Image 1 (tube, helix red, strand yellow):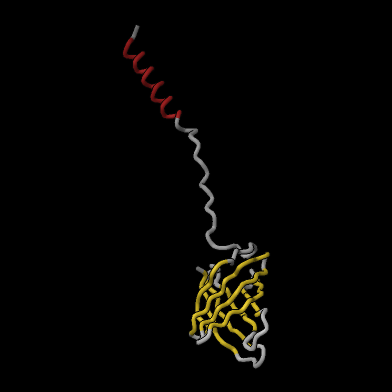
Image 2 (tube, helix red, strand yellow):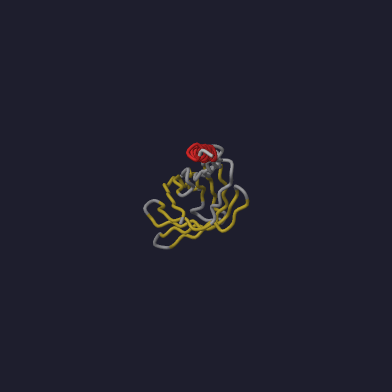
Length: 143
C-alpha cells in the first residue's frame, strides 16, 4: 500500500470538505428598524400636562380626556388672580393644527388656534378673546 498517496488523498478530501462546508451558510436578513417619528396617520395621545407661557405669564393646559382627535381639559393662567377655564378642543394630525375653545362663560373666554410640532411635544399659537377680538400669543410644552 502506498501510504504517501493515501495520506495525500485523505488530506485533499478533508480540505475540500472544509472549504465547501461553509459555502451554504445562511445569513439572516437585516432587522427592520421601526421609525421613531410619529406617522401622520396615527392619533397621538396628548393627554397630560402642558406648560408654557400666555403673553409672558405662566400657562398650564391639562388635557384630561381624549377621544380620537377630540379632547377636553382645563387651562390655568397666572395673572394677579388666577384664571381657570375648561376647554374643548380638536387637532388635525395631517396639518399639525390644534384648536381649543373655552367652555365656561367668562368675560375673558375665547378660542385658541395653534400649530403642533412634528414630534408632538410643543404647541405655539394665538388666543383670541371672543368679546373684543384681542389676540395673545401662547406656547406650551408637553411634560
